[in-house]
Image (tube, rainbow, N blue to C red; front, side, top):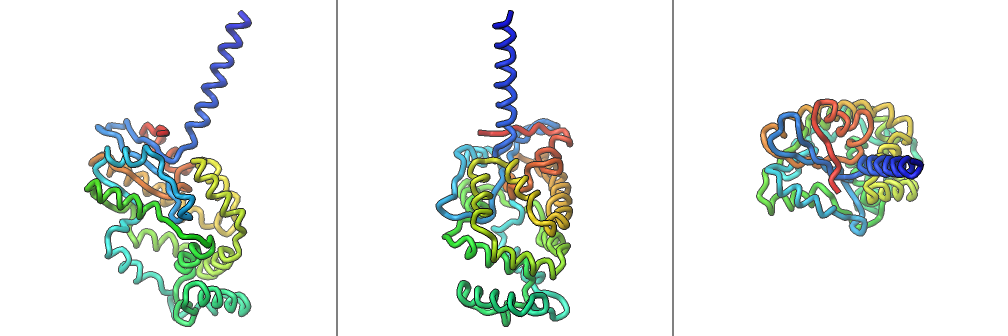
Length: 282
């Protein structure tokens, strides 16, 4: 009797461990809720050092099963960049030197001259959140790879339809919820970001530990938490409706930032609440 009880307990522990492991993966299958064929959800890092880049073998196979690739923005559409250009300048003639202390502005100006080959005389009219996209690859100091770009290459080889889960206008609206002053402060923080914080994010991603990624986001500075509603929560709620619509049309492979997957307001939980079966794929 004792032996039977121990075996039952041991099996229960194994099932618990397995359930815990299943909540940490980058690739997820979406089924049920009336879908005739499964769709897939994959968490990305928008920019990663080339030596850290990896693609789980199940990803190209899952993409092959689908008829469409959907990323946050349709980067295969050249008009996306033209649309973004209309929203990158600060309003009312503001300049970065109006938002930063003189010493910070001088340090940032030197960084751009040394790393980008341009000074802030002209670049200073660009919203700081967009300048951060120029700082990031140079701050991590390595040749970089974009998951979205690589997946689009595979989708084109497989002759898939490519679309965006949101428009440029949607993304600009979310970013504009962050004040220009706070964008400038976050830009300086990015410049000074300790390498160990970047390493923690990369290691969590390489371990496919979306729970750890979510926790790292939650532990970020108070400024980000203030804007989490517009950057993560509201976008996730909008995306869930679009995922439901797109998936009902045809099997679709979704590739979005891994920070959108976990948590009570994450895509996995929201899709399950909507009636879908969402299962990790290893």
